[in-house]
Image 1 (cartoon, one colour):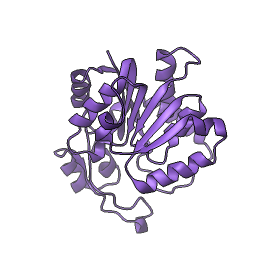
Image 2 (spheres, rainbow, N blue to C red):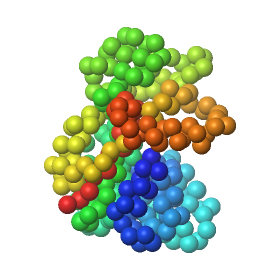
Image 3 (cartoon, rainbow, N blue to C red):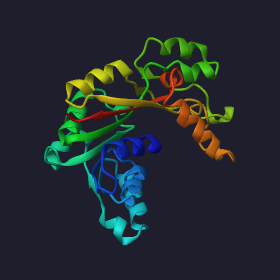
Length: 243
C-alpha cells in the first residue's frame, strides 16, 4: 500500500514539495511517520488511547526534524471539521477505518472537505466483493457460503491451536462500485484503485517474515494492480482526487 500511495503522490505533486498530510485513524502511526521522514508535514488523528501512546513513543525516538514535522491529535475521524478548516490538506489518508464505521457517509464527506483542490484522498477498505475468499481458502464452506450474502467479514471459527490466525471480530466491508459512487458524490471522484493482500491474507498473525520478502512484495504489488487478481484482494486501496 505504501508503494501505491507513493506512486500516486509522485504522479500528482511536484518533486520536493512539502505536502500537508492528514492521517485519520492513524493507529500506531506507521504511515504518518513514513511520510514525515519523507519531508511532509503530517497530522495524525486517532481516538484510541493505546494507539496514541504507541505512536507518540515511536515519534519520540525520531530525530528532531521529523518530530517537528508531525503532530498527533486525539479525536474521532468523524469530527474532522471540529479540528481543521476545509481545504487544509493536500493528502488525506483513511486506512483501515471504514470497516469499523457502520455509517461511513458522514466520515467520507468530512474527509473530502479537508482536501485542497486537486488533493488526494487515500482509502483502505475491506473488499466487499471478495468476502468468501478467505473462508473458502481455509475450507470453511458454511462461512464461505454465508459470505456471499453479507456485507460483513464474519468471525473465523478457527483458533490459534489450528496453527492459523485466531478468530477475529466481524467487520463491515464495502464494494468497489459503492465506494466509487460515494467518492463521486463527495467531490473526490475515483482516480485509480488497487488490491492489497491478494495472496497473503491467509497468512497467520505473527508468522515469521519469509526470506524471500522482496519477491513476495513484488508479487503482491503486481497482483494489486492487475486484473483479475486485484478484484479478489482482501482490501481495496482507492485513490480519489478533489475536483
